[in-house]
Amino acid sequence: MARIAFIGLGNMGGPMAANLVKAGHEVTGFDLAVPVLKAAEETGVKPASHVSQAVASAETVVTMLPQGKHVLTAWPDILASIPAGTLVIDCSTIDVESARKAHAMAKAAGCLSLDAPVSGGTGGAAAGTLTFMAGGSQESFAKARPILEAMGKKIVHCGEAGAGQAAKICNNMILGISMIGVCEAFVLAEKLGLSHQALFDVASTSSGQCWSINTYCPVPGPVPTSPANNGYQPGFAAALMLKDLRLSQEAALLSGASTPLGAEAAQLYALFEKQGNGARDFSAIIEMFRNKV
Image (tube, rainbow, N blue to C red; front, side):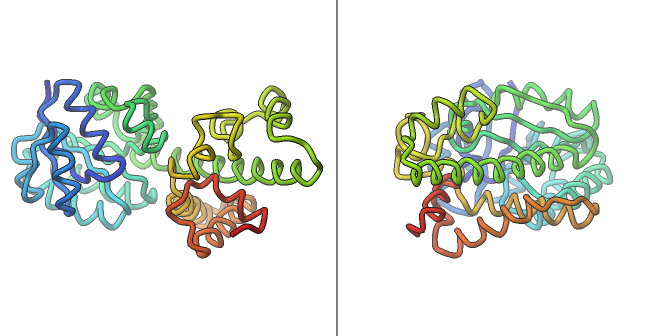
């Protein structure tokens, strides 16, 4: 059993912390939103009134925060409240440069650090089946692995500081592009009089197969567990997809990479969000292609 502090107990962090409790760890949590903190308490997380109280006796600290600026604001307070050698894991999805700055802060404080963003959405967080993409030293990764295994089923060490964020950004750019392609294909099929099931039966078992169709099909019917069968409740919100696509384009600009499809996907999701769909599942963008929103 480990003593773990969990900072950020929202839609992802809450169930992740709950799974750490289920695995037998002692988890103390903090979140600025009181209702969120109370919800976490019901799952066995011990609530703290501020960050320093949450991390006071922790052997490992996990953060799950909205943006890089929040991580860079929280980590100095965390690092000032823990002894050298403590492991700090950031599971937020943020830009690579902010992740590297956080690692530098930890190093200066004599602490171990890991950037370990996740894939799998709220369903994966609740089920404990997340994929973790980790960046940091081998020592940090080895120490973090048992903690991450309590929250996910696949743990990948991608490289040094920032490599986890780089992998997440690239993966989700692929996801955004592929979902748009699948949605366009289903809309075209509708116009041509082809049923959803027929297109699914062909594409899911031939060269068109991908996660966006086989697992997360954006039309009701073929994959009963996809958000399309639940009014496009997320899942993975369109606003979060837009955030990740924008991160990919920032990284492309800084690195000089050419990502024309990634840029187009970012523009399409920006339009979809502007139309008031940010809280819907990202697969609901199919309705924009039907001119229904």
